[in-house]
Image (cartoon, rainbow, N blue to C red; front, side, top):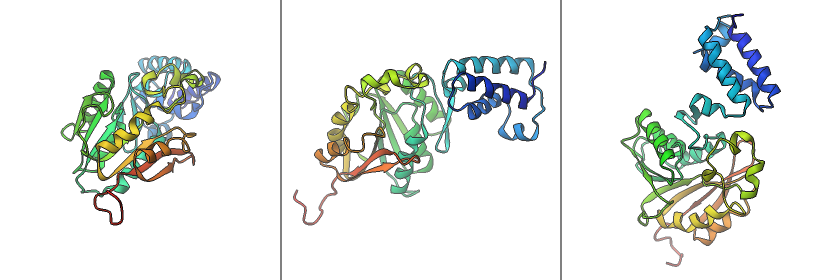
Length: 292
């Protein structure tokens, strides 16, 4: 039997639903579009277009993999984030919509043609730094990651977005070796899940994403303890920090940045109204009435 686009979509949706996938409708659409080289418009305007045998076989493979809880982003090798499309694989975290809060606030803080230097710690696929540079043509970025495999993904994404002339990608241990006061903006999405909670995560995350990018130590705060003073060290006076946190860390992380000397420390919420990003600034030079 030849499958049409609409049949492919409904059977895929039902198979994913029965496999316990939590977003079967969207995932089915993405897999059918990719397997059948179709667009969302095709599904609406040409629903009875038949799939070729090769397309049907490809879809079958995709559905099997998704039913085993492999993330859609790994099956397709790409994921949209903010306004860019990124290549992803099992060596990097799949970019999540919650992380767009970091990008949104960075773009609000720096005007379109403003020149500034940013540092993205734990760069992964390059999502944060590339999304910002794509909209700020005078900005330059440095992305650091301990994983050579992650950096390979970020380099390819930078090249595909034609941003490789404005971003440097370095293998390193957070801020080690970086000079003092080099950056106007520092962003980070460090590992923040307590070690004991890793096994309770959805299989898509637990079994397919890099443990290094998830495990935040016993209480989930190891990376922040290390990063708070270091981020303040590498920020220029008056510079901005935007650091992603777990939804339940809005009370525990800000004091670490206060203690490191950050000012105007606050917590930004994501679209689900959960704590998501710690924001703060390094004291500007020459503030009247402040001790030096």
